[in-house]
Image (cartoon, rainbow, N blue to C red; front, side, top):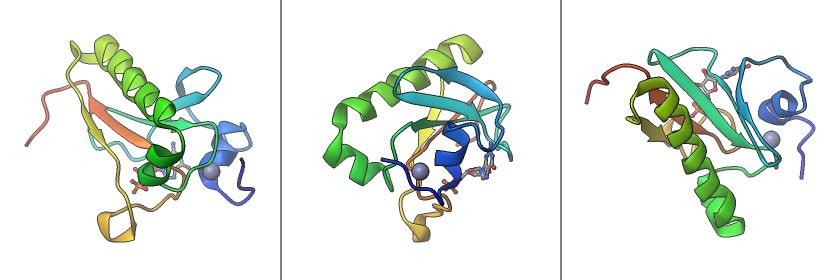
Length: 111
Ligand code: 5GP
Ligand code: ZN
């Protein structure tokens, strides 16, 4: 399940460099290129899903695993506190159509 034109598929496959934060057999996490918090990490499945809605329908186990990875990153970076964001659809600000969780942590966040 790869999309040859997808930016995050290319990052997962190391065709485009990224700053890795975490990886396992199904999941890859890397620093956002334009951070919106002290720690801003993107968590993606290695497989290509267009958005979180598609992922939830097709592989809810993978979705739950992404939340666990977010918790692990926040435990390491900031006492377990974090914000988890899935922009879903162009009108919600999604710009890359390979599902990704934004993990914002590392400092107190504004509401
Ligand atoms: P979206 O707007 O789709 O929810 O989030 C896409 C995110 O990907 C943005 O926060 C943007 O900064 C990040 N991004 C876009 N291109 C790259 C890239 O080439 N490398 C990395 N590390 N992040 C990227
Ligand atoms: Zn992709």
